[in-house]
Amino acid sequence: MSPFMVPLSVFAMVVLIVAVAQLAGIRNLEVNVHQQLHLAELEHQQKMRELEMELQRIHQQA
View 1: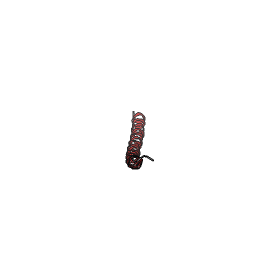
View 2: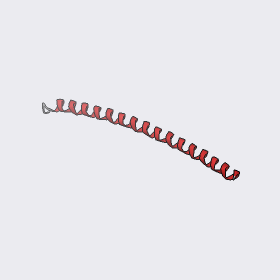
View 3: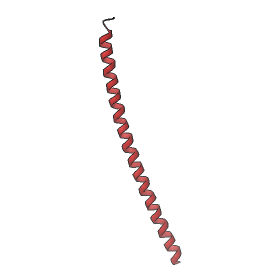
């Protein structure tokens, strides 16, 4: 076995662990952004329903 094999393997393992940790952080950020987008979409739908009801009420009064 080559004398460089153990240090190279340890270095590769460290790089792999750091990469997995970074990907987990990115995934958490992606989930948070998705939740924010979903909440904004729900708020928009609620506002649109309110505006449609107000428009119907205005048409009924006219």
